[in-house]
Amino acid sequence: MERENNHFQEKKEEVKKVNKAFKKNWSWVGWLFGFLWIFGGLGWMLNDFFIKGMVYIIAGIVILPVIDKFTQDNFNFKVPILIKIILILAILVV
Image (cartoon, rainbow, N blue to C red; front, side, top):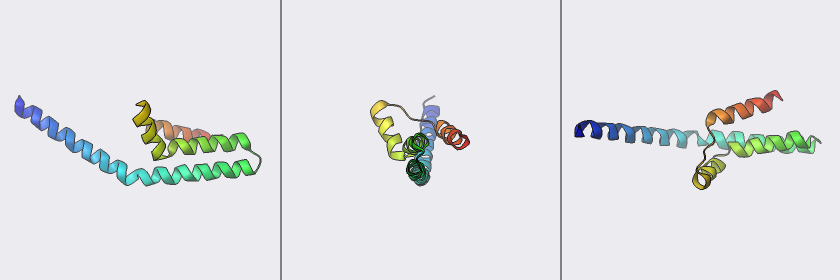
C-alpha cells in the first residue's frame, strides 16, 4: 500500500512539473493576444466606437497572464482557458 502511494505521489509531482513547464512556455501567447486586444480596443475607441472599444479592452485585460495570476492569488479564482476562448469568439462574432 505504501509503495502505491509513493508511486502515485511521484506521478502527481511529474504532472505538476509538466503543467508548470507548459504554462511557462505558452504565457507569451496570453501577453501577445492580450495586448493585441487592448490596442484593438483603443483603435475602436479612437474611431468613435466607445462601447465596442471598451469590450475589447476588457477582453484583453482578462487574457493577460498577470491578471490571471492576480485573481488566482488574491481571490482564489482562475478564469478557465475555455471561458477565455469563448469570450474572444463571442467578441469576434459581435
